[in-house]
Amino acid sequence: MKSQKLEWIRPFEVTILKTKCPKEHVDYMIEAVTLLLDSEILCEELDASEGLVGNVTNEVHIPQLPGIEGINNWIKEISLKYVNRNYNNKEKNFNKYQKAYFSQNPDISITSEWVVRYNPGDFNPAHFHTNCHLSGLIYLKIPEGFENDSGGNIHFLHGNPADYYDNQYQAVPKVGDMYLWPSWLQHFVYPYKVKGERWVMPFNVLISHGEIQGR
Image (cartoon, rainbow, N blue to C red; front, side, top):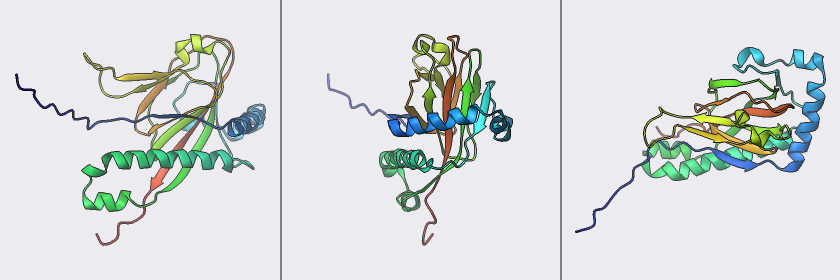
């Protein structure tokens, strides 16, 4: 029997990037967030809960602290790698205007970053982020024994459940882990039971490639 050529078409790829944040940046943020969360006045002044959906202990905006440019520049570097990887994978499908636009060096900016303090029983329902292109987070603090309580894992949700298709992906958090994904991708966290707080630093990234000349 003559072999038949098979073409596998995957037009709806969703890419989640995982990496490890350098220890010096993690240590800096842990120290800064500790001072932030220990101050009731700052937690109130910088409260971010009004614009967020989480049922959690605290959601606090991170101010422009001295030295924070270190971790922010690193986030931008990783975001650029994410953008370039996606461009290289999809370039063959772009028209000339798309190629002209996406081939330009992008301007990457962090539009918002905050810290979420979780305690046992806290949760974050399924949601996505708006007014940005990429969203991500860095884990700063994890309770002991957390790896045995899957309730605290982050879940990513895409499409509808069906036979031979798993529409969820979950990741077990560890201190220093950084995840980056398209801002429209839904994600959520179930309540966990182990004792202790969990600190997460989410952020949103905006990407601009400038104007296309000659269109």
